Length: 107
Length: 120
Image (cartoon, rainbow over all chains, first blue to last red; front, side, top):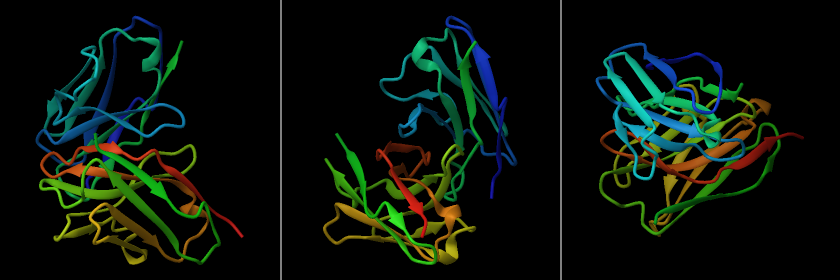
């Protein structure tokens, strides 16, 4: 299995801050990396697919980059509704694997 | 707009079989270019992929669950099912059904999820 490791596991930030979450794969996955946002009690929501493509309806303050083994999710200016848990997921192999999650909390 | 909804017993006894059904509305599971699958999330923990299948094609299972999991599709082409045998408390989780894009393996949309508790 391809292991996905996110950092940090948790992060405190303020409204308006720029934040970056990192995801590392245990082997090269080209650009087959997807990002999700999950709020408490809700299903995950797709934000970014294929490393840098914004899913329809997702605000442009979200962006993704990277290829190979190292990827980032950036939120350019945090809004109150962005405080949530974020997961990366490799789409390189049909045996899907997710990162452990990054919980973004209000400072 | 495609929507998915999980249904099934919310409480299962240890050693028994967990059975869930996913009902798809606004589309069908024999659509080209998509897998259909299950993902679970134990309370307070992360996401774990259980398995995916392509209608009329291959099925893929998480190696750690493979011996206990069966995915199947209904001939109505609007439902698919999960069976997980010999459950223990460690199988207590929110279970999500979802559509998986065949190319980037992006998971979207997801069902709302259903909490299944394993307890006597």
